[in-house]
Image (cartoon, rainbow, N blue to C red):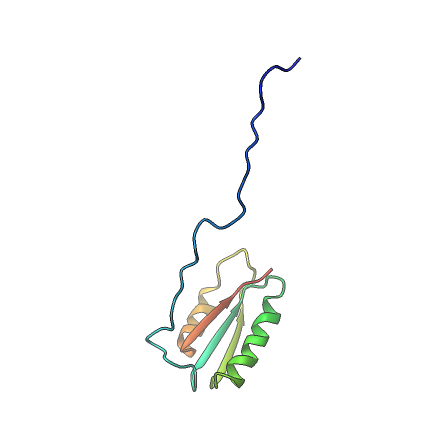
Length: 99
């Protein structure tokens, strides 16, 4: 016969903090005429999201050029050569992740 009272732990799935809001960088007031890099991490749907973002950057934000690059795999750091190339060529870079 079991005689002790059990313990139930209830977990709250809500985030503990409110995400930090960030404004537009003072370094780049506008993307018009800028080269924007998109770095995909190879997770499911990251490519779909970034291709749509590319369309928006070109059509609505008048980006001069969008450079698309991919990591080898999401579980490893990006190759130094890829990062160096993006830094050299781009005014801003978006690292897109998805699942």
